[in-house]
Image (cartoon, rainbow, N blue to C red; front, side, top):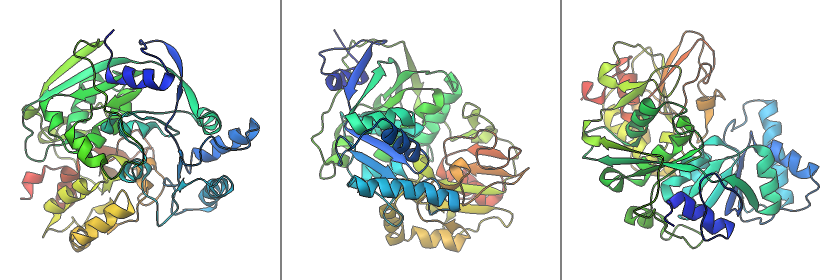
Length: 420
C-alpha cells in the first residue's frame, strides 16, 4: 500500500511495514528536546515517575533559550534546574549561554537532526525539522518526561495535506511569504492534526533556510508536522554535519492525501500577517499606512544567515527611523560569527539597530523588546496573538526580514523596493 513520507517515517520507527492515518502507535525517538520553560516541568515529572536515568544521554538536547541570558530570578531558577539535570545525567547536548542558540536554529546546525529522524520536543515549533525530511512535532512536558526515560512515545498517525508550488519567486519573496500565504488561505486550524507536505519545483529550488521557515510555521495552521521531501539541497546540508546515518524517504507517487493545494509561486508577493492571527495575511502592497514603533528580525523562524543577509541588503547605507527600535537576534553563535565575518553586524549597528546574543527574547514576550500598550511591532517571528510580545493592547505584524528592515527605515510597514 502506498504511503506518504510522514507515514513511512512513522512506520519505520514503530517497527511496522506500514501504518495508516488514525492508527495509534508506539514509536522510538531519535531525539528529545527541552528548553528553559518546558524542560523544568518535564524534569519534575521525570523524577515523579521514579526514573533513575535517561534512555540515552546523547539523544536528549537541552537548550535554555527563551528567557536567557536570564532576565530575572525566576528565569535563573528555571535555567538552574535544567543545568543541574544536565550535569547529573551527563547530557551531552546541553547548550548554555555563550554556546547556545535558538533551539530550532541550533539543533540542525549542530547535526543533531537529520532526514528520516523522529524528533519530539516540548516546544510547538519542533516541527521546524521537517525541512530536513524528518518527522518532528511538539509535545507536552509529561510526554517528554516519559520519552527521556524510555526513548519512545505514542502518536496518532496524521492524515496528510499536500502543497505543490511551481513558478519562480519574485524578488524579496521567500519561505516566510509562502507559508503566510498558505496559512492565510486555510486558516490557523486548516491543517489540524495533519501533516503539511510541501513540494513542487519552487520548493525544490528553495534554500534550506527557506525550508526551515516554512516547516517552522506549519503549527500555525494547526498541523501535527510540516515536512519537505529531502533532496540534493538537503544532502548538501547534512553531509559532514549529521551525527547519525540519515534515511531519505519520499512519498509514493500514488500516496493518498486529504487534499492537494496548488500554487503559482510567481504570483505571490511579500506577505504581512495583521493582528491578531497568522491567518490575517495580505500582500505588503495592500497593507496601507501602518506606522510602527519596533521591528524585530530573528527568532527560530527567521534568525538564520540568509535572513540576516536580506535584512542587511535593505539596511546598507540607510538609517532606522527615529521613532523605531530595530532589534536583531542571530539564531546561533555560529550565525552571529558568520554575520560578523560578512560585515552584516556592522551594517546593522551603523543603521541604528540593536544586535542581541541569540535568544528567543521578544518573540514570546520574554525580554529584549517587550511592547507597551498601543505600540506596534513588525516581526519575523511566527505568532502575533494579542499580548504575545507584551501588553495585550499592543499589535504584532508578521513579515519576512526584508519587509521588517524596510519598515524599520520608513517607520511604517513597507516593501523593500520602497527604500532601494
